[in-house]
Every structure is written in C-alpha cells, then in structure tokens.
Length: 267
Image 1 (cartoon, rainbow, N blue to C red):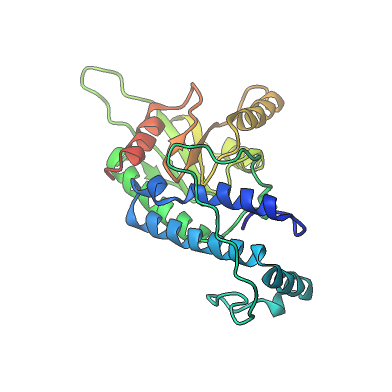
Image 2 (cartoon, one colour):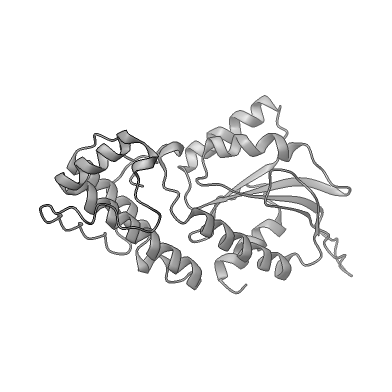
C-alpha cells in the first residue's frame, strides 16, 4: 500500500504515508460524489493501519514473518492485522499536509507496488459517472464492440441548420490502476485498428486514480507516433479523483465537452 521495499526504514515509511494519505484527505474529495468520499475514507483507514503496523517493531516483525510464510498466514479479509499481539504503543501517524500544500516529493511508485485497495470500487464508480455524462453530452453516440476497453462508442453529431456539423469520432475508454507509459502502450495498438464508418479520428480516454508526470506520458506518445509514422489515436490521460485531463491539441471537441461535464459535477 505504501509502495515501499520490505526493508524500508522508518523515515521512508513516514514519508510514504504522508504522500499517500494526502491524496485521500477529505478536503481533496469533498467536491466528488459520496461514493468517492466513502472510497477515500476506506483507503485512508487502510493506509493508517499499514502505518500502525510498520511503525511498531513487534508488529512489523510479525508482519515480515507472515510475508515470508506466504498467503496462508495472512489474516482473513476485514480482520485487523496483528491486533491480538501486545507490543509498544505505535507511533502516531504524522498529520497530512493541509489542503493546497505539497507533500514530500517522491517519484511515482512502480506499477507492481501500487495499492489496489478500493480499486474495483473506484473503477465501477468512475465508469458509472462516465456513462451518465455520455448520455448527457453524447446522447446520439452509438456503442460498438471493442475488446479490451470498458466503453467504446462513435459519436454521431447532429447536423446544424446554419453550420457544419462536427465529425464523428471513435471514443474508447479504459480504466487502469495508474496512467503511465505502460498503460498508453497497452491501448495504442487496439485503438489504432477499429474505425467505425464515418469516424474521422479515434480518441482514447485512459482513466485512473493517478497520472504519471506529463513529460513521461508525452514521451511515451511521441515514441509510439514516431514508430507509427505519425499515425495513431489521440490519447487523453484522465485522473478520476478530480477529472483533470491532459488534452493534446488535436483532442476532439466532443471529448473535451465530456470531460468538462464530469468536472462540473452536473452529471
């Protein structure tokens, strides 16, 4: 959960806890729906429990023994780990940074180490909100089958009486645990192939609870476009915690409108 090596010292544990708990502070999610607030509270509780165990020498020693023993030694789901073993009082977790303050700088954790606590709930809640927004913003869109994506549709803009209608666009949506270069590479090929009749472009909303630095995401797209000689879908990374998105210049207006609807919270 804290994205740390098993031999991490106490100062690294404290820094990691501050970094992770700040992401789920109530002030950071108060503008989101109640299901996201509930999810954030659950993850914050799990993080606090992890910190409690790892900062207590006796509890950490037992935790390390259990990890070496394998999954059979793990406590049942929902149980409070190691609560029955007495030991010295655990250190009080450091307070989360106040809203607007920067937590200790740290590089994004590797994909294999990121917490999956509440991830399925986040996925279901995010996709539910997106489907509602699609109905509001892209009501005339037509779904189609696209293996490997959570949602795939083609927009069918209505023709204006005095202006030219927008072009149809294929829109793919995939939820990932963390939006990084590997996630972009995983969708590039599948999204480059399907093209519904009448669609002029393909856009991929790659959504997840956290984004890698913009420069890393941009480098991944640039490399893929170079290999494809400039061809390929438009990749739009989206952080579902606040619906912030990184829009390439060529992002279709219908996709921008969809994300704005989600940010407005009116869906």
